[in-house]
Length: 103
Image 1 (tube, helix red, strand yellow):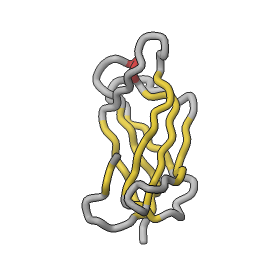
Image 2 (image 1 turned 135 degrees about the horizontal axis):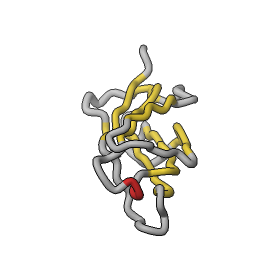
Image 3 (image 1 turned 90 degrees about the vertical axis):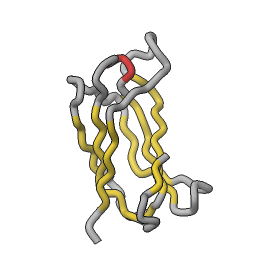
Image 4 (image 1 turned 45 degrees about the vertical axis):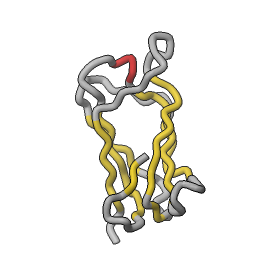
């Protein structure tokens, strides 16, 4: 989970994931991104991705959030599948960046 540091609620416009330095089999492939505006009691679907692939290590991919109407101050990913489900149940990502919509 990620809680915004300014204690304000934000409309999420996009996010960026970067693949890690090794172990491509642990790259997330399917996931959902959810936001909460009540301290995590209720979660709302912000984005869902299926069959996503990172072609290189340290590759950055930006994903636009289709519906940016929800103000949130807490975000979480639920990674549902990795690139090679037969080799590991672990998921690894190099970095995650969030981009809020302009006010």
